[in-house]
Amino acid sequence: MRTLLLPLLLVACSDYNFKEKVDPAVPGEDTATPLPPGSPEVAVDPLAIDRGTLCGSAPAEPFTVTLSNSGDADLTISALDLVGAGWALDAFTLPIVIYPGDSQAIGLVSEGGGEATLRITTDDADEGLIEVPLRAVVDLPPTVSLLTPTSGEILPGSTATTFTAQISDDLDPVESLVVQWSSDKDGLLGSNSPDASGLASLSWDATTRSSGSHLIGVDLVDSCGQAAHTEAAICQDEGYTADSLDLTTWNFEGTARYDSANNFVELTQALPTQAGTAFQTATAVGADNITIDFSFYVSGGSGADGISLTALDTTRMTGFVGESGGGIGYMGLPGWSIEVDTWYNPESGDPTAEDHLSFHFDGSLYSPSAWAALPEMEDGAWHTMSVSVLAPRVTISIDGVVYIDQDITGTFNFPAYVGFTAATGAATNFHLIDALEVTKYVCTDG
Image 1 (cartoon, rainbow, N blue to C red):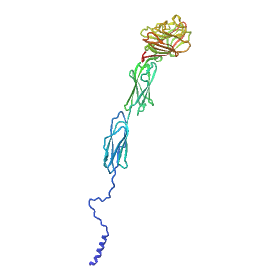
Image 2 (image 1 turned 180 degrees about the vertical axis):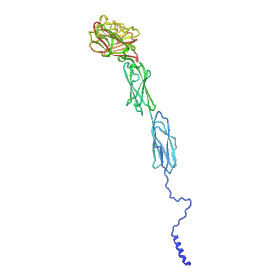
Image 3 (image 1 turned 60 degrees about the horizontal axis):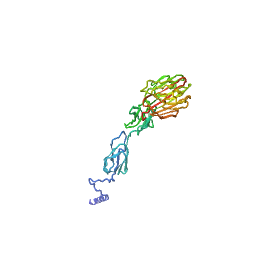
Image 4 (image 1 turned 135 degrees about the vertical axis):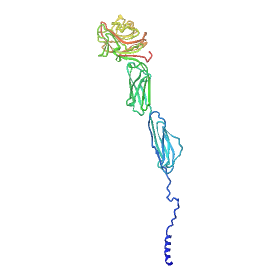
């Protein structure tokens, strides 16, 4: 029996010896394949900061940029740089290390308007340098400059003047802005908007404004409440034109009337023994510091005595009519008169048989203070006269030619109504007045 079992045991032993020996596992020992070293992964939130448009002088405002590490190794921030203006970084210490799964807040302050870039340098292999744009726009005040009038300018007393200002704004369309014009003497003058080029204008009518010094102001406010202001000191002379006067402010005597069909004053028709005077009484002007411009016509008849321009002293007057005929309607009137004499009256002391120009005080027909011969005035044409009295200087021109320019001794300092007189005798003429313009100088010394 023993001899039969032996071969079987040998076979079993031989089979065992050909197999690899496997050691039993040791409890607690990691048998997995080792992982390669980990890497950081940076994330930034937000990727940009835009404060938009800020009204007025915006205060500093804090913002935060959050840096996160979504990788499996420590993230190192080696540099934080700001390039640009209007922004600042909170205090920090470099380097900044962010562990996996953690985050770090970076503080920023917007110091008003400006654009900058936050540059973040990391050891993230894919995002080594990250740039975060920062933007804030502060609304600036609008700008305004007064083009006309300019400071120190003297405005004529009988015309309209256009004031102009140039407007601009950094954000608002200029057409949406409202410009206010004002005077420290007359208050609010008007409100309007500029055109697309930023030009705003206002019509200043001298006849409706106070005379003397004005501080003209221009003001506007934009949609953010930012204001702009400019001003100019000007002076407005007094005065008027005939067209600006209500006819009820004229005093017509004798044959004088206003011809509404032709828009001129008719002192006489071409008829004998006519006399007429026309004075405006809307305002008295200083007779010592004044200019008067007008047109006259002395023709259409057989020849007659002529016309006068008279500054009638309102403190001594008793009426509007002087002596007619050779007295030309001004003889005896208090004030001063300038006559255009077209008829020779030697008995009245005419200095020449020619048409002539002469200056008289208090209607003293026989004692001209100054005179000059004229060319023929009865030529069927309109003529222009310009008179400047800057006492004692008197300058008189007709049709652009100066005939009298000299100092004259006499009384000029009185308030006056400006008007005209004319007369005919046996000989006749139309005596007509047009285009009257009077300026009283209140802005300069006489």
